Image (cartoon, rainbow, N blue to C red):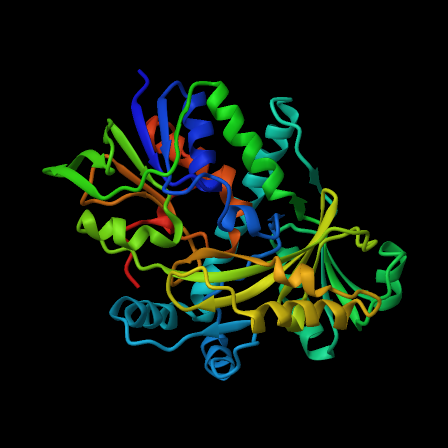
Amino acid sequence: MGKNVVIIGGGIIGLCSAYYLQKEGHKVTVIDKSDFSGGASYVNAGYITPSHIISLAAPGMITKGIKWMFNPASPFYVKPRLDVDFLKWSLAFKKSATAKKVEKAIPVIKDMNVLSRELYQDLQASKAFDFHYQHKGLLMYYQTEKAGEEEWKVGQRAIKEGLKAENLTKEEVVKIEKNIDLNIKGAVYYHSDAHMTPNEFMPQLKSYLKKVGVSILEKEEVQNIEIQGDKVIAFYTDNLRLKADEFVIATGSWTQNFAKMLGINIPIQAGKGYRINVDRETNITIPAILMEAKVAVTPMNGFTRFAGTMEIGGINHNINPTRVNAIANAAEKYYPNLKIHQQEKDQAQCGLRPLSPDGLPYIGKSSKCKNVTFATGHAMMGWSLGPATGKLVSEIISDKEYSLSLYPFSVDRKF
């Protein structure tokens, strides 16, 4: 018997949840305070990344963060502030950043990414969509031996997980990226990864959902919640009362405030990332990460996207030109023949990525609320993990067997 389901949040996680829920015969409504045309789901690097097996909360990140804190152009910038939620999250991040916890998370992250990659391939094969999807792998370019050695350790660990990875010299890289000049020592090449063009797929997914009867409510912001015992009865906007059997919270960086309304603590901080689009031929054909600069490079459909930086400074969409310039400078340093124009920098956009303290998303229900499923906290892997999360959400609400164990993603986990 189909249920009436309301999803709060219209990013990749919310729309993928709607896709799989409607497939199971549920009546679905998606609501968002935006017009479904911007945010992290549109400005990300478009990676599907089984190779990203090391969570953000890795040993050494605290030290790097402190060192980088004083450099606004650094890849990872934490804006110091006296905010209770931020301080609690920082402490939980510190507790999570241990070798043992990172090791435990590796197969979890890998399996979920592989499932998502398969689901993206299913979406493409379904012929309901016509989106850009290429499985060309990911090159991790390094300019120093130290960075190369560090990444090759990850590569060797990925091989143990059944992924194909190679450590290439510059000469070997040039054989596969033939038409560009590269200032690198070498690259670790992960064959497992794929990439897409997010701002092409999102409108297609939204349009498909409308066609199959999913209600899409734009520019409606939830202001209040009606609760009875351990269940939510309705969500209220200024104009609507949204009643349902089940609710899905896919609100990304805004989740903590929603959870508080329900008396649930879900630590999340917004991690701002930026992107620059270059709408001209760059001859770049394989996605790459410029390792020392932590900049992602994606050859999308008709343009190349340069994306990067992690800025933890609360919820805001202010564009910091220093950080935009840092991405452009890094790109020009690794690709000596590339020049990013001022106009391209001026059109840079940002998005907020929801960071959990341990780098794993929250997927499932809290013991405090029977009919609310959370799907959030995906950090830099929201795009990659969208379909897998949507499928898990539909399995939870449809009382079906789960495609993956939900235990690592527990909403009530302690840090």
